Image (cartoon, rainbow, N blue to C red; front, side, top):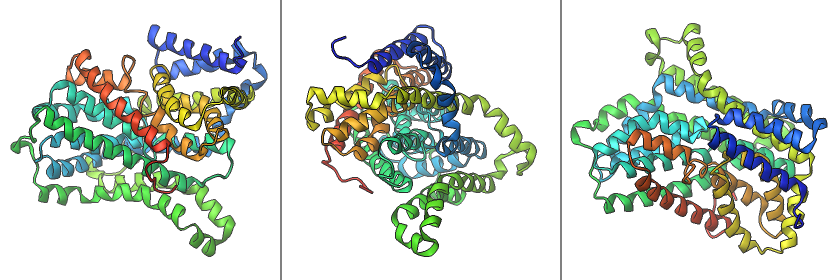
Length: 456
């Protein structure tokens, strides 16, 4: 059919299936991705790949790391350590024009990077930040779109699950092309550019809409906030420091413990980091727990109550990863590469096309599924046509995970924020499109190598 490879036709059928189930029947995404796995197996007749593909994610340490950080986000929420950070941010920037929005940008980005779910983070932190913005003269639509943009940004900053998932996909097609820790440092570098873009955009919008500072009576004093919240500021360092050390001091580590030891350290760094951060959060935030102490009962209650939040996200990522293995078995990467190469696209053309392509896919397919199903093929295509495959892989979370909940009309993060802000769809969608356009343009600029990225 017009020279289109069969695996791509299967992909198109899968996208239609997802759209019908998610948009038409309004089924939850974890259920849609589970059914999608069964659908693509039956459609393609890949019954011999069923068990191998279904079990594959359970053999990946990366999946366990993703799950571990989702659990840590629950600990952070239960111990109220993030509230301490937000209060400290509020005391610093709340006195400036639009200060409530900057608190949203900082706090929501940080929390979403841990939970790995932008729309979910809008629901949890947005109930605090959106009313605070509205009290600062933010129009409801601006408050909603600011929170949406901040929460979706967290999806691309480590230790977000999609960043770790993308590394696994890159390793499948370009083994040992970059170490895991160096990959995470690169992800932080990319996240910094998008953070600066959002900060500048918000600065301009606050002046256009004549937004006011946070009311003085709602501002905590800096001295009080610092005294109460300074221990929580160590948390980001506990997460980032082991990754940075492994990436930047590789030679020193090898000299101290040898090649095998350095390899073991790199493989385990993502496993012990969430445990370390979680233990520290429990220590400094134990007074927020029942009876103000760490006990087995409190921990069991905390984790059992979080199942409804953690499990659906975990199942979505797991089944997306499993579905990707069906396409791997059908040699999707080779088929897509050969098809794209036949068009003789230039690298510049791909730099323009790919962000727009993933933006449209994000309307019906979660970022993790996009990366799992198409990531390997697109990385291979970009490398085959003269681009830097590592750079494309590093930007995949930004082009998929960040845009999935932002692009109207099917933007889940946008809808959640609108519900909290009680804003109209028309006005909020206009601002959402602005955030999306600027995000896509920055993706193209970074993909073209026009801005330096830490670690690359």
